Length: 519
Image 1: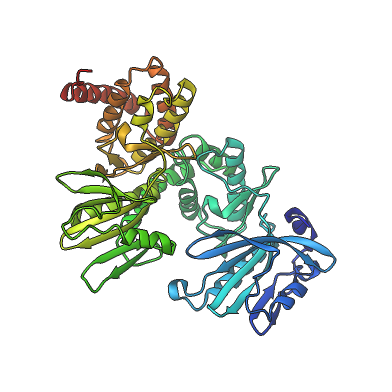
Image 2: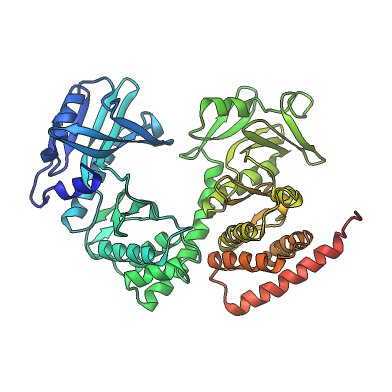
């Protein structure tokens, strides 16, 4: 039975009780109607196993630092049902009540369904006791055929549908910090809720609470609520002008708080980073969830006894401020301790802002010097690619890259970030087509509404592109502006025109200060 079939087969839950049972290795609660699907018999048959979810019918879809998602089709009774199993990891964050959280999440989904909200069908939740420790789990109908809304590609119709879903949830009394990843879209375009972590049902939220909820949800969209997806979502929500304006202002403040939180979390022991101090006086901040092989590779890239790159590493450059070397999967930058901290924090800022970049892996500090490890992105930088006649992008590809680069720089500026070293040498084209920023020495943070420095960033990039002497230069620049304004659409027209003039001025200044070398 498909996920849609499971949704249809579940009887109405009104007045039905949640069925619970306990086995030697499993404590489980079944949602109303799940027993009719035969799921209880399958769970009872697995309850005595050492690893209840170690079943050939289930395959691992994703596995991160906090949860494993398994998916499969189970033979339950006379039918086959498609399910998702969300399995917590033992020992993660030291919380002994994770099974209670799984049960509470199922209860919230059941309550949402009782109130007529479209949700993915909750089936069961509980705890399994494995040799590695207790693990909470929840089971829902499979989301294989559902699509997670992507703020980068979401169309207006889907955004309006999400707005209608949020309005329906708020009118039903839901108080929850919802984000796009808590929702899904089915093939018909209908939006569903798939997660209500931390939510509760009470009286419908007031205007202030609705503004906060819309600000949080629209904070992931380009331009917040003033253009494109955000304005379409508010249209679906049927928000008043006052509520829309309030949401926009609060979304800006939420973005600023998000960067502050990401910066603090980069240098603190927590859910994202693990802080370790070795016997030799080294301090490490290592990203959680890295596999053992990658951690070993990072630790092997320590500087040598004389302070240079280790012998087995490939040296990229060795300058006055420090060296850069790399291995197969890791790039390491050596700087003084303060500079290293800024680099590590800047990489977390970019990740929080949704700007493509190299993932920060670890920061090591010892005796006033630091090494910062980043994910090594495959391929060459954009400057080398454009300079090679055989690999240089044609007009169509160049315009597509310019739109993606414009969106990345627009999001950078929309979050109050600046990159004073924005040039083609520091841009990489990832396998997924996104343009990623590397070499983050020039990244600084300002206030959201502070536009100073944007002209300098873009002027440097404009001068670098002009030096390529491409005949399609103006088309590519217009494509860049389309992507930039989509992400930075909170700029007024007058401000945008002033910014363009400033960019041209900065580009001429940079060109005069860095004359071309004779061929």
